[in-house]
Image (cartoon, rainbow, N blue to C red):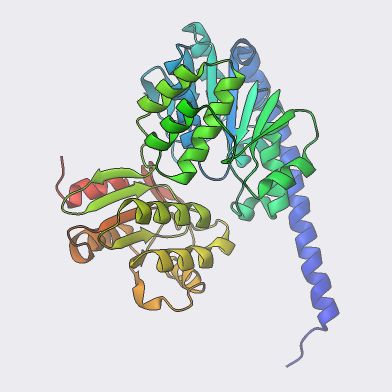
Length: 418
């Protein structure tokens, strides 16, 4: 059998990489015209440039952006501001929620500007906007220039779209560079890259777990948030609130009144065993969630149910399998939006990261069967079952079709909870 010379093969690989990068760059230009000029600008004009009449706070990051956004929103409400929120979970003005759609964090410009127009008409003054790298890169936040922006972290995620970690960081910076002031997590690996790639059009301020905060604030954060990652989310919210002139007392009241986010370490039941639903779908988030469960619940086993999404970053699959099988006592690998990929192929890739914990892994391709097995076959009184990857989402994508699916509701149905 004849194989091409190594140099020829190397050149072919380089050529493929360059072609993919060119296509990626062209997508930006395409969305500038399609999403920006043809959708964003007309919507801005149609609704009377409502973005200019609001103080906008924009938050991005790989993990923690929904919690940080909702927490910031809660703090501003506690301070007496009329504030709205657009997040992964929903859009809120006051207590009124509006569904933003399946698997969508950053809605299309027309929906965003319509929402802002409604806010302005109702006398609202502030908006907290959660933004993804996809949304920023595709001009879904066309024309929006936040007063304050925040970055939780940037992990190795969405490389199926952004191709490299460096390009992913640059996409996140599209949010930060458009703000007057941006807060960046100094403790995260992305801090150096963010400083390096920034265009320098915004003032960067760092925040860290080591920062000295007022005693009252620290005590409130530590009491309300036992998890280290949520304490960092709270520190980001604190810095943003202080930039907006909010008093410490109001910030602490906001922290105390925070009810959590659906699908974010949400405890569905505690008897006869605990069941927690969480959105963790990256290696870092899964590790943080399982570590938090271990630290909080000292007795019983931990049973983890999770998968990896199809047509998304494949490089994280072995890491997810490794982390889940090492930190849980039982790890059930299953479907998580397989899309047009074969579920068993995804599960095999998840197993590639496992070294010596194969005996703890159970593979059940159907998510409903996997959750049912975890709750009715494997969980014992005192155990904790963590169901990860879907969180608040209300659908599962098989092929190209979104089918109704809700992890939390599935748990309630299986256990016959009210």
